[in-house]
Length: 452
Image 1 (cartoon, rainbow, N blue to C red):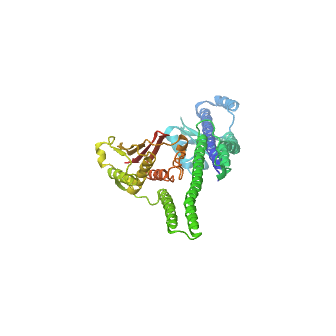
Image 2: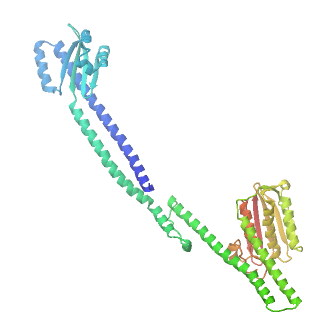
């Protein structure tokens, strides 16, 4: 069932429920009011009947009868009964007793008066004490006016409910269509967006309603998808280029060596070139494997990793590659309690992330000082790595985490653009964060945070 139809039906049912309850209340109170008025009229006739039969002489009786005929219109099927109270047991099997009900006669004897009804036949009775004895005067009549009135009222209310149902359903249909129109427009617009048109965006209406929020959410998702596709395309093209270059060099050098007989020294030179390109190819493929593994969430390992040991091992990796790199370890921001600090994760991956950032700092700083600070807050361990190297151009900062991307000012420095993307993946895996602040020819600062 479509949402539009669900909204229409829900709207119709709710409104119809209110109408039905109001109609029921109208019918009930009209019914009660009509009955109460009719009871009063019957009681008046019972009083007049007692007067005529017991309290006046024969001359006045004619006057009362004339007055009753003139001012008290005879009710439909009106009947009068005069029954001695001491003879009530004799009428137990009569139609009057069964129709008026046992409670009617009991209430009359107890309270001196009583009312009752059977469908639309009404009874009113009063007990009158006379010289001849105690009598129960009963007046009965059929309330045909109320019967017709209530029947017509019922028909009117039922007809009104049926018409209201049709009107409410139509209004609900228009209402739901109007409400869902922006959502249909969004769905239609999103349907037309494909891989080749990820740059398109949905129109966001002014205001802060749910539709605007939905459109904004879709636009944010499209932006992420567009960035992901661009990153993937760049990754594929750059990876193909980086892998193709050493392979081409290896194949070309091998072909050249096999083209004719050469001196042993020329063969050794060719093998040295092939070895160099093979090592480059190995470094690229190893980086690709590490990058792929760091993006896989299925085999995460969690263990308690000591911060001090992690810092020590990362520095050893850096000094093995760049033994002359002046790395200054700053522990002044670390509180005393941090000697026992640990973070949960994989020690090798943490070491890989930190060492990659430190290696970049040493590579692009020459022999200038590299500062490595360790700090701790209530919730995170913070590693701050800053250098005084060549920095990163501002236009390149937004792409610095793209695999194989290299800044425009490092083209002459050997590298493959894998270290920072690898570090970012590892940080993200363990719910950390990484920030880079850099100015060209001034230096770069990298801030890495891991939760305690």
